Length: 312
Image (cartoon, rainbow, N blue to C red):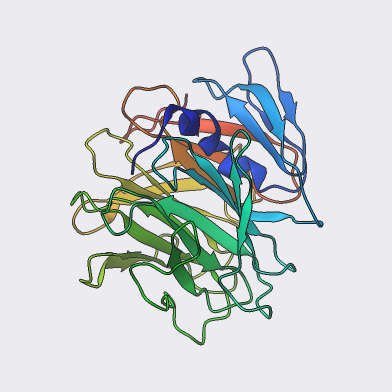
């Protein structure tokens, strides 16, 4: 999955921007606040906050998911925002410069669980598509769309955890099997056994599934795809979205086997994590970005260098 230099600057803020309360970026000379609301923060290679960019919120629109990627052929990334729980299921596409924003409504009005979004080239045509997943309280319906809302690849979408599922899904995109084509990673929502499934997009079913945290936890799973070791093949990083001790676990390889795990929070933490990934220092390896979930005033932390995952 290609990432422009702009994406390296702001795409990592996916996990942070999702939080409705103020969060903080870890800085050498002390924490700097990242305002709450529709705000993007630009980070330097040390995961320090250097600039914030407020986004105009029209009609009370709130975001429940955020992704960044070039949806056209102009080399400029778009900011893709999925609606928050309780709102109409909209996908808002914000373009840089004077290019107008647009909206997609790929689901019916009755879906109010919010939308999780990801971006990647799912059909190997050289252009990125938008992947959406319905959030908590829904069946997690996944769709693949182009910038105009036309469905691509899985016509009609699919239900990663069954049509009767009511816990929703999280979604990420990355080339997990190294075939040059992005795959779709889905993770179960709160209220169910933590489960991750990786789906091929070439018509050959899914690559595999695993339960990263056992059956005793039901806080939902946050997921990211990241090429941590720089080999061109992305790994799957997971953390509990609710509860848990802030542990991040990494899976990859042909059997999606466990590769590493490490704590991403201080002792006693139990708030859950949001994850994102990008190569923020330009070394060819993706770093993982972790931010505490709802209701905490904490720090963004960056990690890199698989398999020991030393903290940046």
